[in-house]
Image (cartoon, rainbow, N blue to C red):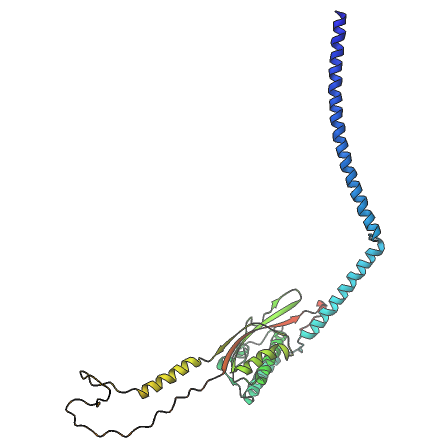
Length: 313
């Protein structure tokens, strides 16, 4: 009996030991796999560090100083570029009162009209005041904060009119400051949109569009324009219709058939002597026209002064 109990205990201990051995084996296998994975990662990191050392790449104090110096250099050049763009696009005006501003506006609009008239450019009623009619006709004077804006916009319109006159256009149809005294403001610059419609020889209209972006004292950007030419086809058709009307033979008398060579008079009418031969109709000449009309959207760009505290209109 004692022998049986001792054998049973040994069997239980053996079974437990076997289970523990299996569990330990599984854990050892997992740990070995994890260790191999860590070993691979360590080897990869060591290889990466060796590559950095071989290429002499390191985050050192010297590298940080170099990066900071480069950043300061770039920032300095950016400020210089902004200063240059501001000087190139800024339109300086003096300090004037509302009365002086209105007098200047009146004098300059009259001067522009005289100059265009001397250059043979017809000014349409829509462009008579060059978009400043509302300000000139108003009873109230411009407010102090509006004066520099009005005078800046006057300089812009004066430049447009100068270019239009030099391009030998035939007519100024309209000028419109699309946002009135307002500007479209961006972070580094502001835009004043202007719409202008002109008419003239197609070559001169092209010369006007080119001069806007090449010969201007103000930075003009033309986002789009439309060009309309005269309807020559309709004029030719009209001329041909007139020729046909003049050369058409009158229809025969109703009820009497018409045959080639048959006299053109009703029955019972005594024959008349043949009319003398008429000269052939001269060909109708329709002169072709190369006149065109252009409607142009112009964005006037002015960069801001980098030193905002010192920026003055």
